[in-house]
Amino acid sequence: MRGVSTRIGVAVAAVAVAGALGAGDASAQTKVGWVGPTPPGANNQVYLTTSTINNAPLEASSRIYTGFGNSVASGYMGVQARLFKSGVLCQITDYQYNVGPANQISTNTYGNCGSGSYNSHGFVKYWTGTEYGDFLTFPTDPLNFTAPAAATARTTTGAVETGRNTRGQSFGTAETARTDDAQPDLIAAFTTDGKQGFVRKTDLVGETPSSPAAAAAHRAGHRSISVVDRDGTTVVGTFTVS
Image (cartoon, rainbow, N blue to C red; front, side):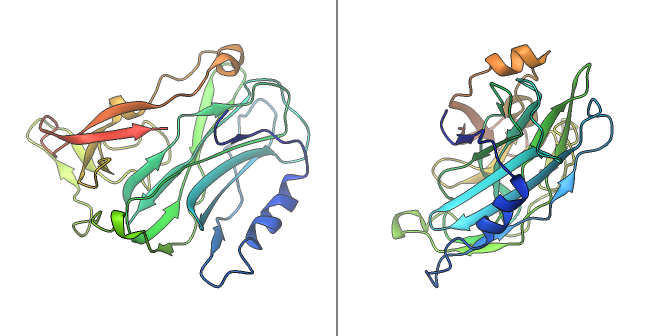
């Protein structure tokens, strides 16, 4: 599975290793967000989460893992990586779930939206015994990235617009939303060719599996969705969920 890891090992040690990546390259940087727990109610299981970003190449990753290194059953954990540029969604992965007993799972983005300030801020899902709860990781500190010349045209237009349009739809950044449902109706995002617009939450958020068996059978794939103006209808480009 592209961009997915379900390695068995001591998760806390992996965070320390990640912080040392790129030490031999003065231009390479890695930033790791704080480790945080999921809320109570995770089927008597303690899960921890973290996100990482590095710029050689630019890549955002998110991870969920068991707090005591024990394995959980297939489909109990899910993770989605998100890369933001100045509050605008640049890259996002489909949710990935553990397909066998595991104590962690991670996934990462590929690509960039031009030079600028980025951070990694993902989502996780965990089986509660009756349904999936979802929560966000702590964001990493910002990391500056200088894109190849071909991508430098992708720029933000300033602060992300927030408010409601004439259709009553909320629009703004999804960076601070704590769950999928808490995101605005129209989420600030870049098109594949660098324009700034909004993706509809209903298009971006996929269907949550009904059970761990359904989650374990889920296979992530690429899909394209429309990017619209803040009116919610005028299409300005496309966005790819990887």
